[in-house]
Image (cartoon, rainbow, N blue to C red; front, side):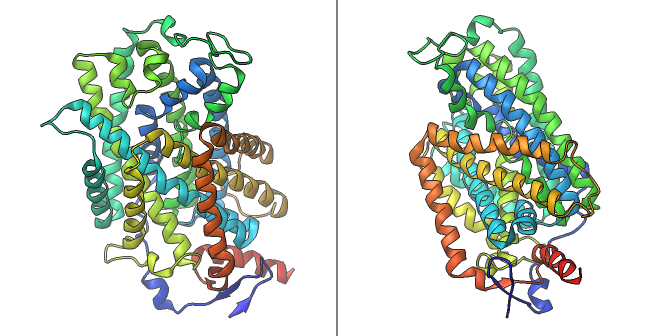
Length: 474
């Protein structure tokens, strides 16, 4: 065992057989599949979840929050495109922060991402249940067994292999995008500007028809605006399974955010204008209800289910790769990163799935959404700090892609991410405090146990060790 100077952690070298049991299938995806992966992470947010922000800020509050958050995500993605081109590994945000902020910062970032990706599928499962029930097929109603069925079915598909899973995700995502196009055409015929502002103004500072809950409503709507883009940052988690990741990961994540910016604007305006802000503010399937009854509504309902499934399916992939990377490096129990004969991490797929299913039984999608956003926002703060630190500390580091605006761009994303963390406490302080408690428990585990058992020759740790070696040579 050797003690490092970074955070007083202890690292050791494992034998070759250790890493042989923890191999992912390389070269399984190009930039187009990665773009599809990025869109599929998020597209369920267009179909449900964002609309709860109408109850917090009205159309005006949610619209302003969405513009700000869209800017944050664009800056965030540009920063992550640079980081992923320089440090392509399955750890994603954890790998970036590990290089910039030592093992403590790396584990904190990975933990926040893991909280986000473990809880988000639980929220999506409740939305899937709402869409299934509204279809009224064979008397199927929303319930625990629907959540169990989707978890079990899609985890099994992932166990078959990443190449097959990414192709299935791409097809489902394409169908979901067609559904949004069908919705947009149909909703245009129902659009009425009066519907945008039909929530009665409350007795709050700055309250008006446009901002029915005043200025504070804008801030409270931020977590729901994030749902339009939540998890797009997970594209770099596929780096080790991508052909030419230095080039394809940046291209894929940037292409994904461009599509998501367009879909966000269309869905927010057309859904609210067709269905009414007040009516949509509590709907489990807002796009369907905005169209009323008819062939278009039924079509969007079926395709909307595909959109929810796409995100559910892809975020399962994301949480398994984040857990895999943390486990392989020794931050979490190493048994979780063992891969099967198809080179997929079995326990890393199953364990968070069991936890997510248990959380889905809460049945409150808005509550779970806020919890997932808390983890996401904390990880954004740490990743953008990492980008700024690496720009300052390692200006000569090889960067095949460079962020336009550099640290200024990531600094903007950092500032908004800090506000987003605070906003989660405004929406539901109890949910945010629970997540904070879980985050603290993970950090305690690292402080008292796993920081003494890190694996120095895991790929993510090697990126950081290379920097230490270079510093010593200088």
